[in-house]
Image (cartoon, rainbow, N blue to C red; front, side):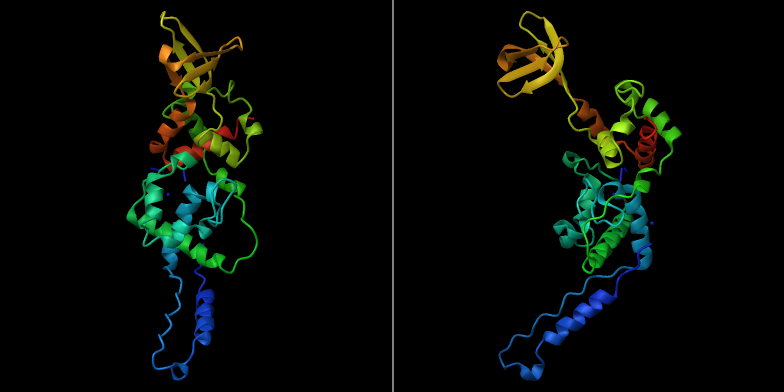
Length: 275
């Protein structure tokens, strides 16, 4: 799904059996009255070339399985795509392609730069999985740990210290020390891509010119408040001061358009070594 994001055979028996069952319930022409309306033909799920499904599966497992599961049936953080209304209403990739390319940053999904052929492959795989789900029983499957261990840790370390700019805010021996022991699997992936509960910093400038910095404790259109280094809570009316908020999560969001597939997998591999 530029990048974060292998063989399934198409299930043919289910559509055929479904068509036969529906056809058996339809009245024969002789049994219909003169003014009867002919029933609509049963809708048969679309099938796709095996090679296209295979390519879509490989790409899906590379970019999407760490949230949506290996079979698109959902993971701990990503929804079950086989039950998705958007997937059902998709026509030749018009909806799936839009989400893949734009992402959903508010939900932690980065955008992915993918060609028309790649989008078509993803659609083929996801829709085929949706067809398979019609006959599958049981609940949603979790994400295979192997999907989160495909990167190169050394390359991830180089990205962390260099092109990714991670080392300007984080330290493997400081704030990230032992992070792989506190967060595992998808929780660690979430923290990397879109950290939750990341504390923002704020600097308040008083009318006198004095500046006071601390951890942002509260902010609305009327009040700005912080907790200073001594642990004291301080607040001001927003109309009486100037303030600047430094939200760490913004730096992570800005990386969404810069990550490549290898960057995400390699960085994840490196973070898993910080125990």
